[in-house]
Image 1 (cartoon, rainbow, N blue to C red):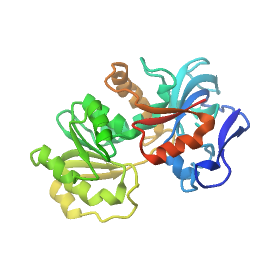
Image 2 (image 1 turned 30 degrees about the horizontal axis):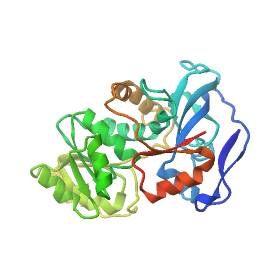
Image 3 (image 1 turned 90 degrees about the vertical axis):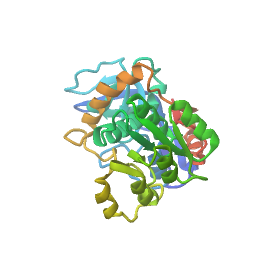
Image 4 (image 1 turned 135 degrees about the vertical axis):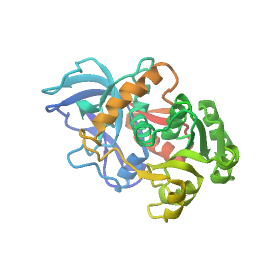
Length: 328
């Protein structure tokens, strides 16, 4: 098969489409003929040499894919050759074939084509596990999404609206904020020109945000705590704004607030905190919302997989709304 490989850590030009050995499914694994994968910020970090895959995972980039089941390993039930699926990966998505634990495989949701389904696994599992399973967002609450026009953000806005929350979001231009409004965001904030703490408080009559989904990390930490409502929950899923910040414990105590930071890639497959239980909950509770059309994959660009370098440049430019897909 062919896959994207990294000649050495560096810029997009180190990505090369070349022939590599075919993977073989082991016990409990599924082999997928890949229709598409998607670009995530973690891929950019791995390409630069900063985010290695977990031990035993493929060195090939790609944390999600969609396609067709080509073979199943011993002990696998529920999947058969020919099934259209999408999957959450620890690596290996930028390839014509990939092996994945069966517990991380999901059916393509009803009403979604197999290529567009590649835009769902990573964002769906990240948003659902943080916003619903961990933070417990519920109807009537205020939900602040940072980076609303990106892959995570466009999905999170839709999930928040589908659950009956009032969604606030930040983005860096009028055009990107307009896209967020089309997805259901009611409070839109240009972080280049406005302070999100002031704007959210003003729009909610001083209440603040019950749940904040943050991709910035340390750079936003003090203001994220400040914007929280009493009993608020802050979930941190990225560190684009740095790794070290100051946490005001007094403010947390006064608000009875919770701060959590999570990741998906290094979790085990099974167990209480594993990827398998997250995937199962996504299929059980989120996929029906997708089938109803209340949550949709947002695909900004589709690029041939062999041109992954171009896709990485698009991601780094920050101009695409939604996901950048790589089609085999």
